[in-house]
Amino acid sequence: MIKKILVANRGEIAMRIMRSCREMGVLSVAVYSEADRTSMHVRYADEAYFIGPSPSSQSYLRIDKIIDVAKKSGADAIHPGYGFLSENAEFSKICKAEGIIFIGPDEHAINIMGDKIRSRKMMIEHGVNVVPGAKGKIESDADALKVVKEIGLPVMIKAAAGGGGKGMRLIKNESEIISAVRAAKSEAKASFGNEDVYIERYISSPHHIEFQVLADKFGNTIQLFERECSVQRRHQKVLEETPSPLMTPELRKEMGEQAIMAAKSVDYVGAGTVEFLVDDDRNFYFLEMNTRLQVEHPITERVVGVDLVKAQIRIAQGEKLWLKQSDLHQYGHAIEVRIYAEDPDNNFMPNPGLIKHITEPLGLGVRHDGYVYEGFEIPMEYDPMISKLIVWGLNREEAIDRMKRALYAYKITGVKNNIKFLAKIIQAKDFVNGNYNTHFIEDNIDFLKEDIEVPEIYEDIAAITSFLDYYSKLNPNDGNGKDCPEIESEWKSFGKRRGLIRF
Ligand code: MV4
Image (cartoon, rainbow, N blue to C red; front, side, top):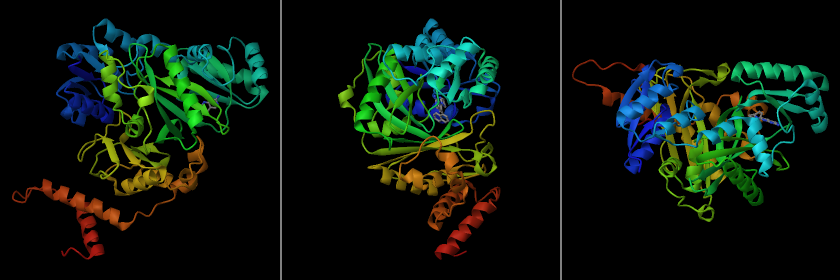
């Protein structure tokens, strides 16, 4: 039985993992960098250890330091979260060698899925659909020309070590092939230290749909249905929902079975995600498998009713899967949006900094996975994601209405953020109709950037909470309370509008 888990991560995901630990009676150990001295995960953990300077290369990516802390604290397992060391085969291997349970798959599964050419071959061998294209890596200029002739233009060149959109290139004309393959190879060599590339047919307006899987150490594998992740910008997901508006029961069954095959083909253990491209005719193709817990896992948790972090921990301590495929159903509809400290009016430039005020949305069907608090400074060294807002409704329409209500009530001051941009997304006609693919944001960018009129009542909710919060922090007797004219004036205008408060 696992008694203590070191969480090798920060931010909202560290909080997410430790919350499940607490429910299970498992102690949690935080690690933190210089920039995270005052971070929420450090306060929430049962123990916390400093591991180095702010850049992640000197802290959250330092395998040696993290293993040291695991030993010093007596942690019997490490949860890597997402990003950082979560898909590092070496880390999984070292944990095992040091007698520490890695909460994730073994070295073998991570290595195969990390190499897109190897994983593609593995999928073909196991009857999983892949995008038509080359069997293996491109060996020569002649090979590239031959492959393109077979599959037909346009094609995509991808790096074996790429993924998530890195090292991809689209070719539309025959004359570009040789130079594009050479450029792709040198780029791949420079970025990943591996120059292998392969070629696939280009799927022009795909949906990105992924399946959640869970596998135990005894070969039992189940799938927890899909997540529709087509709302993304430059390979960064912005909104995810489940069920997918494109899905049919037949397609779900077929894709789910292939997701299970994909996991079984590498003897996968733990929680994983199988990504597919789906075209308008509902043809689907394996893209890659993510060997970690994903950012967007909460929508699956809500609709399927499984705590995925708990499931990871139970699987890691050797429990046999307690759920059968026939136990699993989707109930209602869930949507997640990612709140970023970024400026939609300035090319989505990251805008880390001090959180002056935050009013988090609450109420029926709302979940908020965050980690910031008033007075916290979002460090510039890491991803600028502030939080994730997840809503659930009996059906898609209700989920959208609820998301709108929650986004309108969500106030953050101090850092620029994408809350209004997200509120536009869920009101765009193509989104509301469920008629969108991976081009949605670029196709609707003018509408999405238009300003939004938030009804006054929502401003008032923020004004009330910020006012109460502001005054609760003041000590009226010592005269040291800091002035906050912004909140004062918001409160006064609230009073004027409602005619309720006399100043
Ligand atoms: C493709 C594709 C079209 N055809 N492959 C982007 C992320 C990486 N994992 C694979 N990606 C794509 N691969 C073929 N053969 C289009 C994309 C793609 C994409 C995929 C998923 C979500 C968003 C995307 C945005 C642009 C391109």
